[in-house]
Length: 243
Ligand SMILES: CC(=O)[C@@H](O)[C@H](O)COP(=O)(O)O
Ligand SMILES: NCC(=O)COP(=O)(O)O
Image (cartoon, rainbow, N blue to C red; front, side):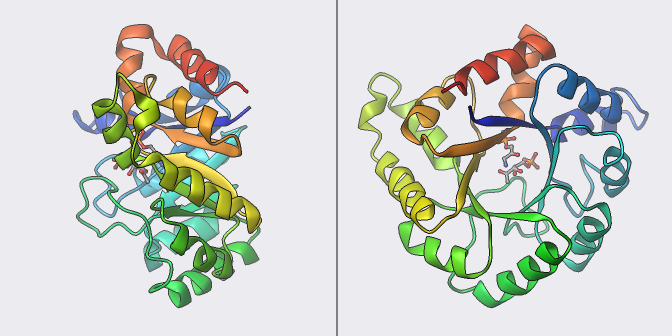
C-alpha cells in the first residue's frame, strides 16, 4: 500500500488568517495521525505565510508517524532541517516568492549543489527525496547526486487528468511519468509523488505507478475535509492508495 503523508500547510494558512491559534496546527497534525495518515508533510516558505519555522520545531517531538519537510535548501532551511532531523527531506527548487511549487529540479545543471546538500542531510541520517518533473533524462543525475527517492511533480498530470476526464487512458503525459518511474526504479531510487493530487486523479496514478511508495497531499485533501470531515477524508484518500 502506498503511504499517505498529509501536508498541513493549509491548516496553518487558516490559523494565520486571524493571528491566533485556531485551528491549532499541532493538535490537527496529531489528529491526522490518529485518523490514519502515515505521515505529516510541511513545506515552510521563507515568508512563513503558512507553516512557520517554529511550527516545524514544535511538531517534531509530537509526531509518531513519518515527518517530511519540503523546501528549497537555503542556509536557513538547511539549519532548521539539520536541527529537527525529520525522517525525510524533500528538496524543491522554489524561488522565495513562489506562490506554490510549479516545477522540479534540473538535476543536471544543479547536480553539484544537490550533491553537497544531499550529502549534508544524509550525514544526519535523513532520507532525501528530490522533486522532479517526469523526464527520464533527469533521473540519472538525481541518482548520482545521492538522492534516495524522487518525488514526481504531479501538477501537470492533474491538469491533464481534468481535461481527459472521460478517457484518462489517453493522457498524453502519462507515459512520461511511467517511464521516469521505471528508470528511477531501475537505478534503485524510491518513488514519491505530489502536487494537486485529489480524490479523482489519485487512483489512476496509483494503479499505473505500482512502485509508488508515498504521496503527499494537502490542498485538495483539506478542501475535501470541509465537506466530508477530516477523519472520513483521510480514509477516502487511503482507500485510493490500496494495492
Ligand atoms: C512540493 C509541493 O508540491 C508542495 O509542497 C506544494 O508546493 C505545497 O506548497 P504550498 O502549500 O505552499 O502550495
Ligand atoms: N509534495 C506535495 C505536497 O506536499 C502537497 O501538494 P498539494 O496537495 O498541496 O498540491
